[in-house]
Image (cartoon, rainbow, N blue to C red; front, side, top):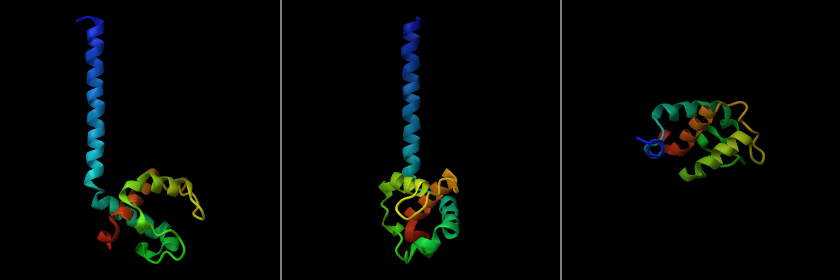
Length: 114
């Protein structure tokens, strides 16, 4: 097999693997968060977020009502929590990316976890 043909085959294999990885990632997101991730998010929320956003996301008393986040606003949520927004300080230095992902899981689970 010549080098050009080998390179073309290798590039196709790499592209197929990349597409498979993206498909798996989208399938995981479509399946939704695991119960364990939601539970972890609930604990993180209770400890760090509830003083301003209310217990169990109820009665936010002037803070943003997290129940209004749509499932397609994940990036907005992650950025707001990590970097802060308006009166909310940034939590990216205090919470791990995994903690913030778990918070997202809790927020989008909404009343189903209550």
